[in-house]
Image (tube, rainbow, N blue to C red; front, side, top):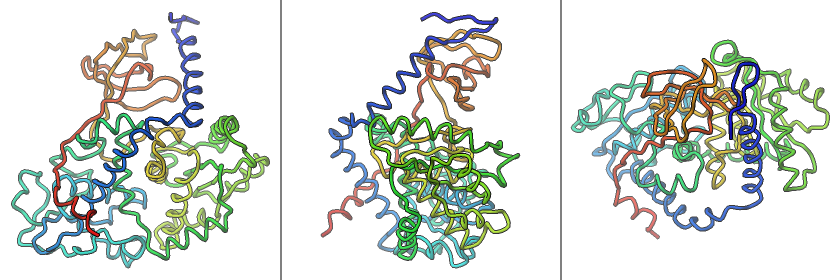
Length: 441
């Protein structure tokens, strides 16, 4: 198909038209139940999950804590809940890769002074003591081999950087993951999130009671609007109309395959005035929201146990919606998206982000590989040849992405459909002892 020049610029209207409708067809087919690959491979998938679980249990519950190799992680990174959770995930991934038991130090947590275990189940049932024969700060996996207890810094200060950081996935799972999931790195991160946020009984009860009280039921689309500390610094202001365009579009898609009795939206926000604004502007929608959570999410109330309860509930409900509309510049939104992956065979497409693509703070380089050649349409574009490696800067959500061609060193735009993701793999250690855990009666 030829490029079409209009007003001195070159655009791909015929191509964009075809790809837009092709995307809609694929989406409809997927949601209509064309999931044979998941059915065929479900046994292998369960085996992979079982193996990951048994390894987690083995590493985190050593028989003799005094002899265990440990990695110490302090939760009090200077940021909000989503960021702190991702900090613990990062620690856990490094511990997993370096064959260490993670010791989570969370006393005097700024959200809950009693620590992590007052909200979530302990990361370990048998090993919470950081003592050991030798202690040192992270200096690299090879250099730390003979040190029993390693203190890990925040990812921003990590040097040298190990290969276990996102967006890498385990080498032995890579083939199956790429066949079964649209975004393997997100799936891998989600497994650590799932283990870490197992709720204590009181929190689980609150989740169940809130579900009933709010009238949370499907179909429902999640909308997360961040309006306080991020706006003007890390993120731009987005009016509710920008979110609702995509909510309406997805409800049209849902209506093609199921009966939609009501168009429900779960609205999570730190702006208490937004709920009434949304109800006024969109009277044909049912907005489900807890305004007390919005008040507690304000900057002056953020670091309290009530605020923690609120953000956990918001993430819980957002992750259980049919589709998520948000800004991926927000860690809360990304956590909800990660949890989504643990609730479905493949929920990688269940979102629309108004700004960033998915990323994990402190991740290693995100690269793509060109699969089609590209000749620049204007001065903003960069040329591509098949096989070129592109460092991804972001997606403009208009058919174009921005990045640097690592071969030519040029930075600019390129059509998103002309590249594919470069999946990085890493060889994780094998734990034959771990499988015995799940075989016990």
